[in-house]
Amino acid sequence: MALIQCSECKKKISENAETCPNCGNIITYRMVYEYKDKQRRMMKKSLIFLAISVALLLFVSLIFSGDDTKTNSTTPSENIATTTSTQETPVVEIVRNSSWDSSVSQVRVWLKENLNDPKSLEFIEWSKVVKNGNGSFKVRVKYRAKNSFGGYIVNNQVITLDASGNVINFKDF
Image 1 (cartoon, helix red, strand yellow):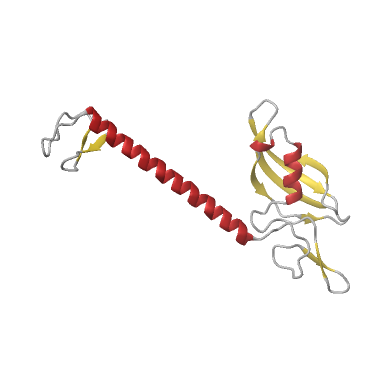
Image 2: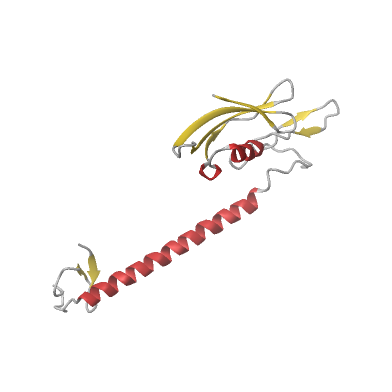
């Protein structure tokens, strides 16, 4: 049982009432239908406004977050892993965590290319990129995706990348 608004006194009343208890106005099926239709249209407009607002907010945040895939940065910052050579010049690492969501772009692309259902991929957690002594990198990623049977599973894997950013090994964590 829903509440509707009386067309005369504007008080809330039951949709099953035959007359308004406040003013005595006769409640017809048409009045109930028109009120519910008006509420549906208002709800639809609100949802459209909310969706546009969220999309605009995401768009603006992407614009101002910068492009983390650029490797030609002239100044190192806290989101770029750097090492110093004997000349004191920072070297920008190819494999690094994004400052926005801590993801590693090479691993993100590799997973989307190698999963059964790439559209089902949802990232849960990323570890910090660790550089090995041989120039390779390791990162742990926890993600959720559909398996070949269509069921969702959570994987927690350690991905090894070479110095160029290519995935060379992966194993369960």
